Image 1 (cartoon, helix red, strand yellow):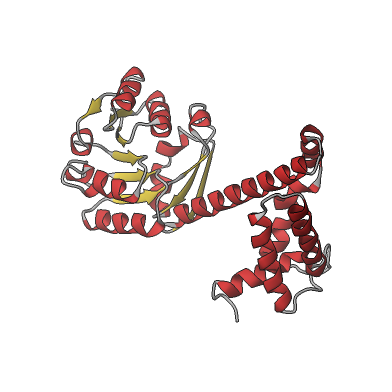
Image 2: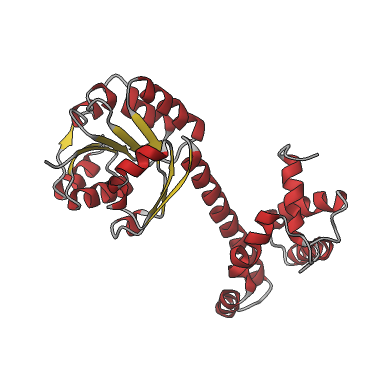
Length: 294
């Protein structure tokens, strides 16, 4: 007999994941307050109920993909929450992007009621979710994940375990931090180039073939291991260049808040006397600011 999954939150992302779980042979039912999401789910052959509790009645698994922490709490622990009716010992996978602390609090209350709760935020978007090209970043009891990973494997391309409850969300927030920061830096630099008279197409062709898009591969390992020697490019030299970039931006009347912030970090590292070392040593300034070093 097919295992039952109650899926809470059937929007673009949740609906795509739920549909793939159904295709894999699970009995999938759902809940979503949005009429549009309900209709999309029904078109995929997923019955929709009027509350999380109704959807989760007798469910072996409860999955959720909702916008905010309070929605996660309400979906599982509210007056009509799924854990009122789910099968005893059911496993819960939350795909939402919320604060780790919010997820940990729900996980602790779920455990007190005899349920297993894991955070499993998604890497990717709704378009690639349909083709099972997303990844799950999981936090929680590894033994539970190992025993029930088939629920996730059927809907993803990558599945990575990062540690106890909240760890998957920490990795998701770091991932989004890096993606959004790099996107802003690219947009700022590209805008400055256009305003200064460079050809947009030629700029992008060059950037694709330059070191810009290989930073994670060329710099990531050294940053992780704190390998600041031998010096590939000194912090002091990049600090000097950042000053030139700021002057260049001002001369062209372009806003450059990203580069202003970056120069502030490099200046902090310079003030620590780290100028002669490789520019990756800027990590030491961030660690000091975070209280990880003196």
